[in-house]
Every structure is written in C-alpha cells, then in structure tokens.
Length: 316
Picture 1 (cartoon, rainbow, N blue to C red):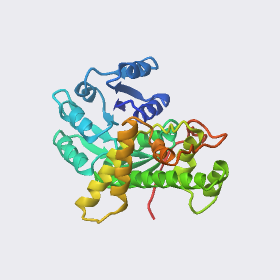
Picture 2: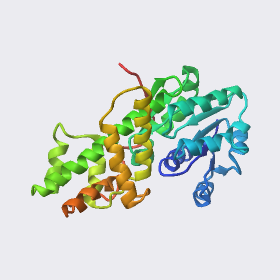
Picture 3: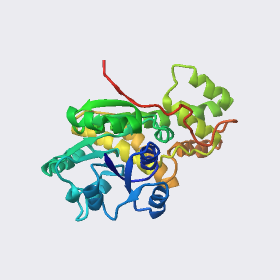
Picture 4: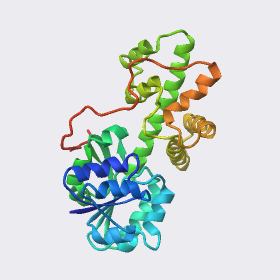
C-alpha cells in the first residue's frame, strides 16, 4: 500500500517516521521544506501538492494543527479531495472538530473513497516509538483495511464507532490532560510556598491517589525547568476550546472547562502562543515570587518501551 502523509510537525513527523522506519512506501508533504528533505534523504518521496499526493497513493494521512488548516488542505483547488478516486482512503489524525471531520468525510465519500478520523493520544515521545494510542472512527470494513497501518503507528488501537466518534473522544481526553496540568501547577505552587521539597512532592503525588499520566510526564519537565513537552499554549487553547464547544452544543453546563480555557488564554497572552504548555505554572511562580524546580528530572520525555506491533483494544 502506498501511503501519503501531510503534516510533519511535532506529532506528524514522528508518526511518518514510524512508517518510514518500518519500510512502507511513503510520500510526504509539509510547508517546511527542510522537514520534507529530511524524509526524502531517508527514502521517502515528496509531492508538489496535496492533490498530486492523493493521485499517487492509496492511503493519505493528514496531521495538521487546526480544522481550518485541514479544510484548506482538503478543499483548495490543488487539495486532497481533487485527487481522490474509488478505493482510496483518507485518515485524519489531527485533533479536530467532529462535525468538521464528518463534513469532509461526506465529501470524500462522493469521490468513491473512504474516510476515518484517527487521532492519537499518549504524548509526543510515544509517537516517536510507535507506542502511542490511536482512536479510530469509521466503518468496520475500512477500519480492518487500515489496521495494519495503525498497528505500526501505535500500540493500542481502539475502534470508537462511526466517523467523528474518535474526534469526540480525543477532545475529551485532551481536556482531561489539560485539567490535570492546571491542577498540578497549583499543587506544586502551594507545596513550594508551604516549604515542601519538590522532589519529595513529586514522589508523594506519584505514589498516591493524586497520580496521573500527566504527572508522570509533564511534572518532570516542569521540575527540570525546561517545560518542554512538545506541546504549546495555542494548541491547548484550541483543544479546550473544542471541548467547550462540544459541551455547549450538547447543552452540558460545564464549569471547569471555561476556567481552564481562560487560564491558558492568559498564559498564551503573557508568554506567546508557542510557549510550551507546562510553563502555565509560570503565572503562579511570578505571582508568588517562587521557582518550582527539582533536581535530577529530564529536560524532555523519552519512551523507554521497546517498539512492538500494536493491537486492537476491545471495550468491555
């Protein structure tokens, strides 16, 4: 199967590299020519436009920063949709709006092609090793066609239901990650002001009922001081905004998400849209005249699990 991949950023580049590393016939495209060239030098092909790529490959993957960008890549004059034909498949791996992915999927299907939304979860460091989790929304027949690709890109693959369902669950899980991050920033600031040792505080949380995946990853780069988790303020604002929109559409009177959204909007305004998201703690460091740092923590997360073939996770 010939595969095309558009979007070689923080997550997309790592996912595309898993395909290349495992011997797939891969064509790539990105607005950053240097990123494209790095793949070409290792054996990938490149395409002059999304349309040309869609014409050349059997399966085309997009991993892009926003629904607006994806719509442009799909629907512009030289976009993906213009190059699709019978039997081809589009996989949307971005974190996006479920209504938007359904809208685009309906257009894709008019070309005789199939569509799935397949966002990933588990941290950029796990995308690099093929150990990330993947939610997959779409019909079962298409899911089974792409499962060998998904089990190369990720470790745990969950078929979530019809197209759009994976995007809903991705927005929900990203929201939970952001809530944990905001809560950890407050917990660390309070512990620091109360005179606690930060290494001891980290360990107390890790072995307690207050532990989380976010603590075991993002807390480490907070305490190192790098705050480098390969995820930025603007992406958090986008993701929590998508959750807030989903809640409003479904008339759920949420109270926490608007607060979290405002916290990260303030962080984005203070430190810039491309500031690493764990540096949201800087708001409290500045307010309290403290530095929340430990010793011996890594500057960035790496995945120490060996790369293994993925598998489908079945719900209870």
